[in-house]
Image (cartoon, rainbow, N blue to C red; front, top):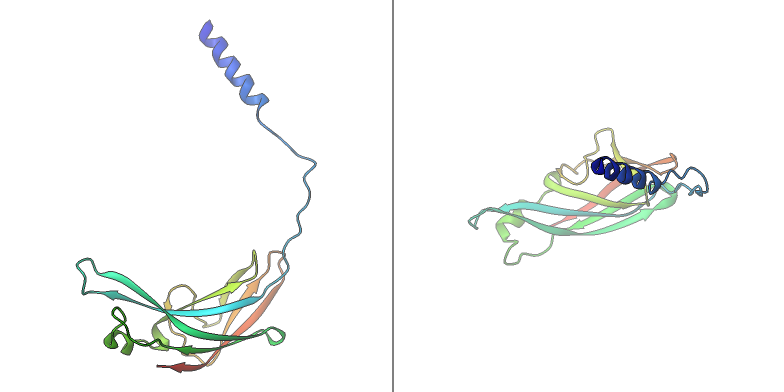
Length: 154
C-alpha cells in the first residue's frame, strides 16, 4: 500500500510541475534579411609526414567585395607564402578546383547552391566564371547571389 501511495504522490507532483503554457507568449518577428556578408576560402590536405596522417588547413587570403544592390560577391584569392607546415610542394597543389569555400550569411537564413555551383564547406571546384547561391531568410524571402572569383594569385 505504501508503494502505491509513493507512486501516486510522484505522479501528482509530475503533473503539477508540468507546464502547459498556451497563451501569453509573444510572437517573435522572423528575420527578413537574406544577405551574404563575407566569403572565404581555405585549402585542406593530409600531412603524411606524421604517424597519424593529420588533416592540415590553411586559410587563403580572400578579398571579398560585396555589392549588395546587385547581389554580387567578387573575390580575389591569394595563396599565402610557404611556412613549416605549408611547404612549396603542398602550395603547388592549391588550385581553384580543390579548395573549400564558406560564407557568412544573415541570421537564421539558409544557403543553397543554384545550378552547377559547388557546395560550400567541402572540397569543390570553384573554377567556373560565375556561381550562384540562393539565400533564404527566416521569413521565406530569398535572394540569388552571384559569386565571381576575379583573381587567383599564387
